[in-house]
Length: 520
Image (tube, rainbow, N blue to C red):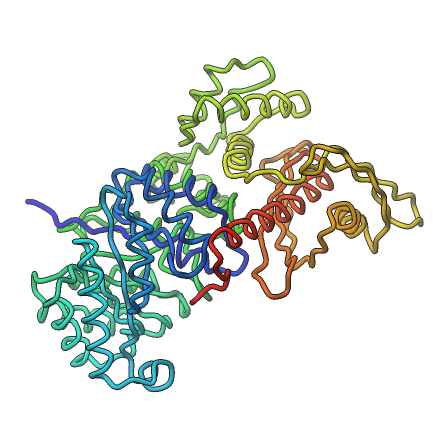
């Protein structure tokens, strides 16, 4: 029996990036998009082209490198948004414009200040304009979960008439129960039939995003919008990995549908997203949490030892997780073995990237006895997604005697190639480092967030530091990452990385003459 394909629409790069602290630069977004394509995602919502120069640039470049997945840009039902989206995705072999307008009474009255008739007219105009640029147009009824079902049918009819191929019905505020989603989707499926694909985009405010997505599939939805690790606004979105594995493991319940997802790429993708955003899945997170396959109870351990399926409903290998995290590389490993290992971890590097990363690997191997898979993931990701270095940390020396004043001496290479050394004091060691960097570079930053995580295990584990820094109160904060066995050096690198991202963003703004403000 032939099965219906569930279209996996990944919005990690758009809605996922709206998680507080999850901003990514263009190189990071390109690397993620490449991995999402490797994962087998059908549609990659690469961003919101009209939101900022950074979003436009990232979508434009992703459209040039992604070949198999559809590249999509979000756009409000506004002419400028739609034309910007069309320009950004122009180079993509497969492209989609996703336009939306609110349809709930509360949104139409208080946010849009429009009548239902005006909303329908605006929606029709937007879809018609998008259709003039691309064949594949998706229309979303924002806050469909709180919209009148009769109005949803009316506006869907109108936009389908002018070319919308997908009708998305988001539970924008995450308020609906599975039974309510089931009722809405079954009614809309009966009304729309085969005229368009019905999609859902469920938020997780009540912890029901995945349950609601699965219930929607059972009642006729054939596209689900989701993110890796469940990232997204507020409590996040439906988690891609949970939806996909639920469909696979409970094939008895979903025998009529399937996805094109390569599940062995789920764990590598999750780790890449966590490394780049600095947002780790909670330990007990389903599918990809670090405790997802941990068995502490003696009864559970005994059962698993006798037969894995006593307590494991699928094997970690099915999602690409090697529980042994095999130590296969060391200081004597050659380039061929290094390249082969990285390919198995999901990285396809250019010759230049491989050469640079191999040198960094050798430097790490001289300092660290055991090299784990997560060390390699962090090493490669930090190298492949780093932006142009306007400033670079050359040396760091700390002077913090017991009972003394924390101080730091920092040497930085400036854009003109000169090296400057200075020292400073602070309320703590980190504060001393950052204040000294501010004085040398001439840019004063306000630290908004600071996170440090051990990449693997052992006393010589790599420290992965993520900072969020605001260098201009009128502009968004930027993210920086730093990696080193020395946590203080990793912190300095992260802060410099944030500064370099800020300088790069300012350069892009000057070039395009636009604002950095995010529209949504």
